[in-house]
Image 1: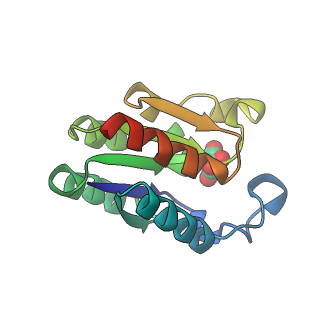
Image 2: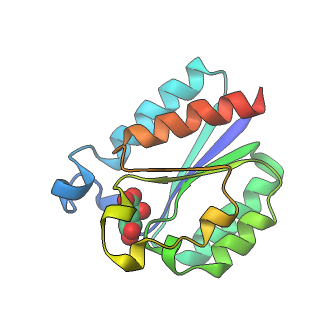
Amino acid sequence: KTIYLLNGPNLNLLGKRQPEIYGHETLADVERDCAALARDLRLGLETFQSNHEGAIIDKIHEARDKAAGIVINPAAFTHTSVAILDALNAFDGPVIEVHISNVHKREAFRHHSYVSRRAEGVIAGLGTEGYSAALRHLAKLLD
Ligand code: DQA
């Protein structure tokens, strides 16, 4: 079984962008750690990051045939994108939503998520550890 690990806009700058909020680990570090964990969990992992809403939607469509579950940090699109919600609703497997920061401690515009309506679970504020927690949980759900 393969999991898609999807990251939205500006997360390509992880580790360099506002490290006081998002930490010093880079996206490459996160993807490497998740790939190792997925191997231990006997899952395949495909990673994808884009700054473009449509590219993320296309990847979710691809997941319909290729992935058993999705871990997604939609970044700012969390708070704006009905289109990403609709794409996830067209996917059959479990979805876990991850935020590195605790969005509820931050500006009010970060408190609402369109994607949460579709997610089995939402992780926020655990830093980049949230991604591995999400993978572990998906492994259980798919067992
Ligand atoms: C984020 C939180 C979002 O509000 C923000 O736009 C991001 C990252 C997080 O991981 O904490 O880009 O999803």
